Length: 130
Length: 130
DNA sequence: AAATCACATTCAAATTAACGAATGCGATTA
DNA sequence: TAATCGCATTCGTTAATTTGAATGTGATTT
Image (cartoon, rainbow over all chains, first blue to last red):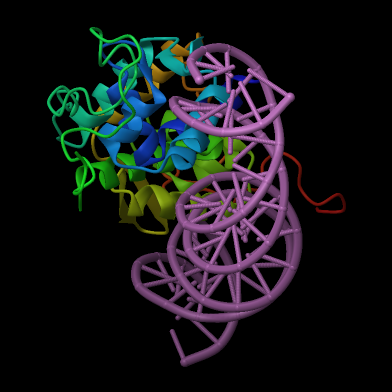
């Protein structure tokens, strides 16, 4: 693949706001899909589609662990690109918008105590439950 | 315009190889359209279309001088983005592919001696000319 | 083996980008 | 003012991207 094609493919991957959000979410390390779903507020299939674009662009790779699939950025240099771009347009780099609203997904990383925590139902249970 | 929209617009502008070439050609300073046409080998209208995209993305601005219109990069920070991107994918930054093949266009910058040089006909004139 | 969980893929419709061809336009010269 | 120069814009067609909806898949539990 030629130089300009690789460059084009990189920018094409960074072009979409949802994909930039996903990459920002992966700044601190690998995350599962349910984590992105919970923190970004997109539908699961929608996220999976953008993950496929990022994967085919060679930016991320995945690892399965039981039910969950964890994604991580292959080359941290993407963050240099993202940060320079934000600096150019005069924006701050997001302090990974997640962090709060913890344990909203059921992956073992978000719920270290109970290896197989309850499904994504949190405090708000069915109104008429016991 | 929101942050993510501005970021998206920037990457969308950098996405196309021809536009990256144009920006690389403007590293050393302003150039006229005929210069890009001569050095990049694209048709004039094609270049103008990409210049319009770059202009609407807020990356370049133009200045008229007689017959020629000179373009320049507004925010040099784009080169930080381009260079980081190339570094990430393991490519060198192009040493502005122009420079040689000088004076192939008729703009006063390429032909400082004769303010209004002959049109783009170079050595190869009409076969049957005097 | 059947059901379930987390996630991926396919399909189709709508939007947008790319690009060639043709034409328009402002400034300059004759 | 008519012709020319350098460049911009519009138009139409083709290709790519986006996004929702539906469905498929591998690992796990029962």
